[in-house]
Length: 132
Image 1: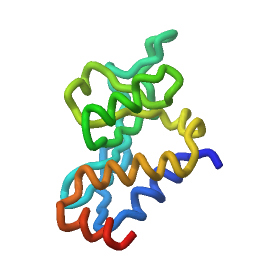
Image 2 (image 1 turned 180 degrees about the vertical axis):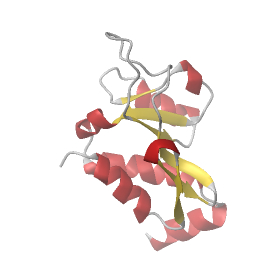
Image 3 (image 1 turned 90 degrees about the horizontal axis):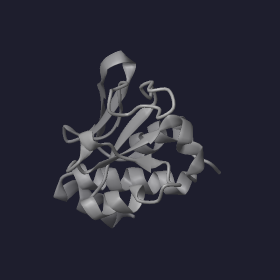
Image 4 (image 1 turned 45 degrees about the vertical axis):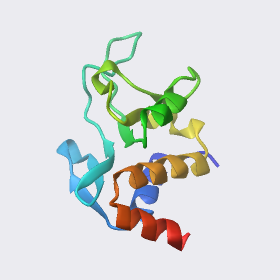
């Protein structure tokens, strides 16, 4: 099954100790221990349609464990994940809502679980992993 925007919300909320911080324009920010791990971004000048120059209205930011994980997700030009110079050195990837269907639900779940693991405290990580 292909992933959807609702899956992003469901997978983020499935993780323990998650709170939702109300972002601007009704775009949620999912946090663990006060640290964001997934958020729906407002249109910004660094993520634009190359044909029209219009800002993408549907970008989701997802944290990753490391720069090598980030590169593994963004280096394939067919991947729906991307980055922009604004995010150079930041442990996250971007994905447009309209491209989530290129991922399976399992792939999206893994990326969101990794995002949560990269931001949760050691105690919370260990507890979640031990319960699996």
